[in-house]
Amino acid sequence: MKKKNLLPVVVMIILAGTLLTSCKKSNEPAAVSSFTWVYGGTNYTANIKLANLSSRGGGPIIVGGMGTSTQISGIGPSIKVQSLAEGTYNFGLNTPNFVSYTDEGGVTLYSNAGTLQITQYANAKVSGNFTGTVLDVNQSPVPLMISFANVRVEN
Image 1 (tube, helix red, strand yellow):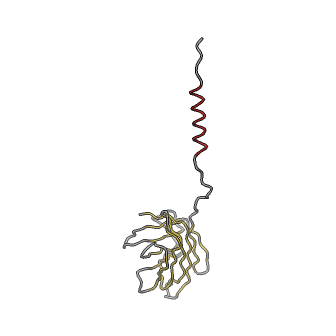
Image 2: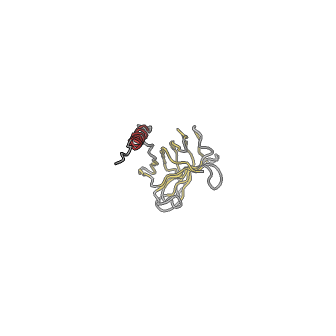
Image 3: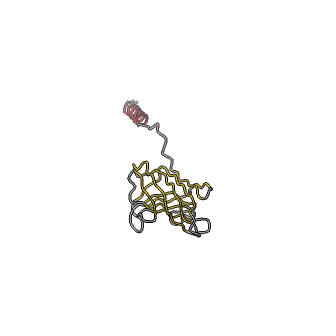
């Protein structure tokens, strides 16, 4: 009876086990994406959150909404800004930056004043805060505060 040499099989099992256990694992939790806002004293959390480097009309846009897809974002704000670079951006009637807000009735309102602070833009994710006002249908300013973190940026 001929003996089989099990050494190659044993070596393969040891090598496979070493390879699987030696992979570097990060202890860092995955970055959670969030987009929240307060409009007229009511708090909202977005179902949809996305940033795009080039929107219609040029330049970056950051969107959060209560809708079911990026095509139908529903109730919520859109931030149109010159750049996603970290820094402070002013919003007003005579600036290229603006915020639009679609309310529960489907009416789109526009910012008349505010400030956006982009706190981080790295690894195709953007974070920041907006504080300002949008004009309601009677042209009265309504406070709008937006906070977003680790929102995915697409080209």
